[in-house]
Image 1: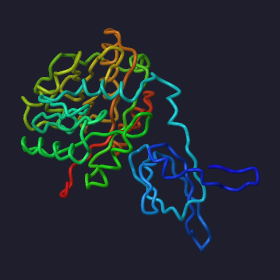
Image 2 (image 1 turned 180 degrees about the horizontal axis):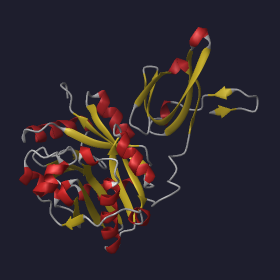
Image 3 (image 1 turned 90 degrees about the horizontal axis):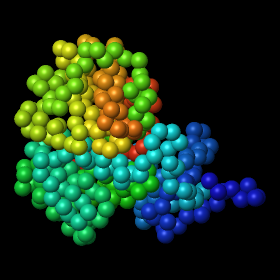
Image 4 (image 1 turned 90 degrees about the vertical axis):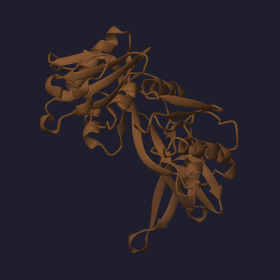
Length: 329
């Protein structure tokens, strides 16, 4: 907030600051009629009709009546992480895209339309990095038609919460009736600490392709052959399976990065350190291939996984969201 030498709050933002990261304070009536103050920090994605829209780092849009503002200022972009590997949003976004590849893709300007028979949103959504090269409404119409031709729902993947992310695009999608169907946090960490975890990896088998046991434990597979075609693609892909299929995981090594995913433990064997063992075994193999940094994705409504990755030293880098075309899109 802006506080002058006289102790007064000031509003130092205008509609010209749309697209910038801001910090604002608003006032509303609290309990007993006393004023209550609420702060919001995020990207100012619109200021129209007397209402400000601020998109927070978690992708949630906050709508604030101009009349309720008591202070506001432009603030620097979210600071770089203080621990773990440094990475720009675009670098990490492209690494993640290479780790989970579609079976079919088509460029639309700088965007990439991706399809894989409906197996996972990541492989069946638009990777909206950069400029589509045409007006947004026209681009979204092209997107919707492209997926309709494949009997698939239209999704756009967009991110928030770091320098260079797409808060403005997220806000524009919401205004056009696209629904944020699911959000996830992208986390990063140093790889060596994961590999150094005290875990029993003796029963873990590493392979280049998932077998039926692995696919069965992963459990998100309707068409095993289709899933296998997506899962095996990537720069250097490894699958981990603990004997009897009690726990599985996947890791993709891409230069300095090791990306972890599909870590799944049988319900009756949870809370026994098996997920940690799977991650440790994969991390050790990734270190052997020259990787030094780790990333993973965890959905925001998965507290158990979030707690596990907290303990391994993973910290939030940015969030990403899958927007689905609404009925009027």
